[in-house]
Image (cartoon, rainbow, N blue to C red; front, side, top):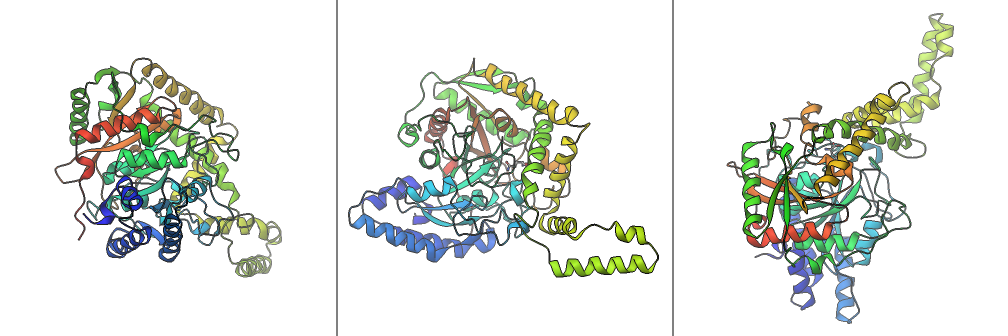
Length: 513
Ligand code: GLN
């Protein structure tokens, strides 16, 4: 087995035993990336020299016997949405194409403190809006299992790089499914933690009440390790919860006794692909064979999840993205050109005797905002800003935003009631396996419906994990989603690991030449 195929847990064993150096490991990944990323397109930027330098420093410290962090020497990829000091953080948007973050996000700071090697930045849907990574302003990412298909999104690059052995760990973010859905479609393990478990400081905001960063890996063991490193209370983020971080990586190997798994009746209704359904039902049988009880529960408000999400998320986005005005933040249009255009228009109107129109032309400042935003944002981001602005506007606020908040509360109550009866909920992560590039990109509604099973966890603030549970006849991975009560990450990871000790879906690899 090549070095780049090993899990982080295995690699740490080799590093600690002195059987491999971080420099060798980093080189192995750099070569693998050079070999396969031209096909996959998972990375926006790979910092080979910077990574090698970090690796050599850690190797030297290890040699001197200095105490090292929990990820010492292991390369990690980071979604291009998390700030890293002095580095580009583009959110795959023209708006931030040249933006260099002046500070480290807490997640990145914690990775550095754990002595991880930062390998590069992964592709995503622009500002994390999308479910296929096709909304990136810069490149397409392809699903390593079938290069004609999308890896899902928005953390499509972060999922594809792990699936294609271009990293063993990556950081994604999940606002409505963007860690779990691409993890499912690429056949890896991805977890959205409980809202507040991981600090959002330095995570470029999409929808602040839903956004959460989390681990993407090949195994639950590795996800536990990465979650342990990035979790914790942060004085920079008032919404981060102030409860101690359990030793996820130690606890993960302890099987859960007397587990009751809930199946949500409404998850197995119209819209669910038959192959996904049978793979999920088989996975539930595996839990039964491991001693779990299965119980059906009902989520009466499940059908409203997508509608509620696509009001609340755009509302918050329209507010968050107002800051990109070309003055405070973001790309500014060519000012000289702008002023010349304005003068020419004014002259034309005056020459035509339209004095009033000439006087009421937009001032150059308003134009500057408008042109900068028109040029900087892609069409999906503009659609979200318009949807959100509309739903928040006077006269519509009560009918849309306020109503959505009320239904959001009811969705949370569905979870609370279910967790009185069951420990965890198991079900499909996506409605179908990976779809083709181009298949849904011109049909926003079809793209939004892909999020059917993932948005509720964000609306309720609970944690969820997707783990590989089979393949379609066409050889595409299928994901099993487990969801738990608030701050039950420990349980979720242990349940996921239990499944991975009984099955080998997570060890399958795409054939990339
Ligand atoms: N697909 C969803 C959306 O487009 C979720 C995105 C996310 O979780 N960042 O909003």
